[in-house]
Image (tube, rainbow, N blue to C red; front, top):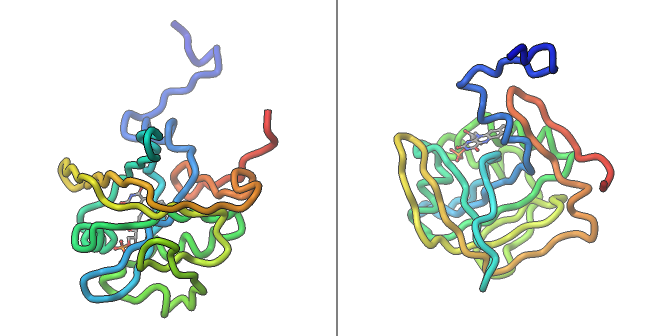
Length: 177
Ligand SMILES: Cc1cc2nc3c(=O)[nH]c(=O)nc-3n(C[C@H](O)[C@H](O)[C@H](O)COP(=O)(O)O)c2cc1C
């Protein structure tokens, strides 16, 4: 079959994930055993269930501080950056909380969590606070399963959210169809 003539270019198998990666980005927000708050952008995050409560999974590299914090504290929040927060996303994704206190070093204004002792960066489109229900480790990828305890969002949160494809390609969703 001549797929090229139909407009389908070959996608290297190592990049195939990006075809399904064009989703809303999250900040995983945590508090460590050291008492420090941390946050890291994570693109690999999706809903898992909604009945009786919403549940989510997120994939974190097991070398990350946010992973260690979640194991230690048993909680995390998913905060949804707006399309005007790309710079903050890149900053928080460029360094580990093991090396710096990101909230302090980057002067990130934040709000307290509603249900949990976490810091939510100001300006996000919304957030969900979760308790950890399970983890799975596959190689260096750690999957956290979270159960929603509290959630808040702006009226048109879905219009505001920053989306990420990979290779530094970000986008803002277009109009509702
Ligand atoms: C746009 C973007 C998306 C990212 N997505 C993920 C992801 O899905 N999973 C992950 O483990 N790391 C992801 N990262 C990398 C982490 O955010 C980065 O390594 C961060 O510094 C980890 O911080 P921590 O050690 O404080 O947890 C992403 C980074 C960026 C900029």
